[in-house]
Image (cartoon, rainbow, N blue to C red; front, top):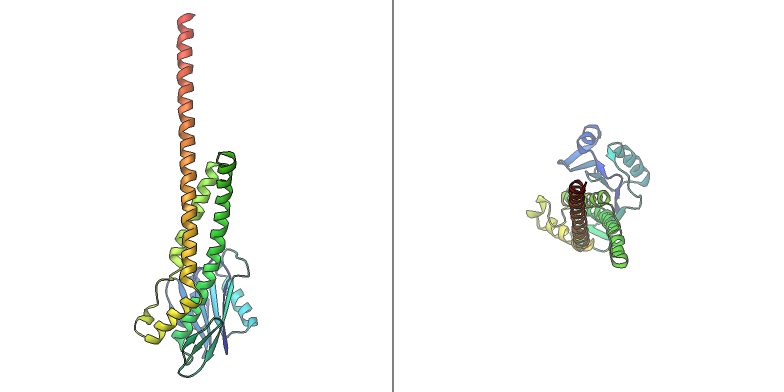
Length: 258
């Protein structure tokens, strides 16, 4: 039995620099991914969004490889963002279970699919954490509206919160392709079945939709906050104009009297 282990080691990995400095047999690459073969039964899959997946590699070697790859990464993440699944080889068998995948042979494309979806599961965990924190922050301000009738956030902090939310939405769009399938699955029935079964086992689509639902709620809250702030600034501007007009009238009155 073999083991796939995917973990988040950074928030971003420079794929171009890593490719120039990583010595192994490169099986697949694009601007976002690198898939390497270390031996006939050992593989490493590296993603630009900071996740690395290992197939049949010891914990000691995982630590060494992670340390080497992290030199090309940026940002820190919590070390519990990991996902494991076992892989068994049984001739003429193709089955995905809760904690195990059975494939008929050591097939590079099948292994790549397993590593891809294991990594997507880790990415979903990370984005779920981030959106949970954003929603908690937005909830603090909605409670302030409910209890005090006013928005307790400065304009600059509101703009930063909006910026963080937009960056998360952009990151999800760029890094997660839950509803897309690799090109190789279009022409191979076994790969297509494995792709769909892995998505169902990791519940990728539902988890992705839950994150999108949270983002929609956060976006709705931020739009409300922005409207309140715009109204507040408009009211302030109106009062400034009124005060200036009153001062001008008083000044004219004083000039006429004296």
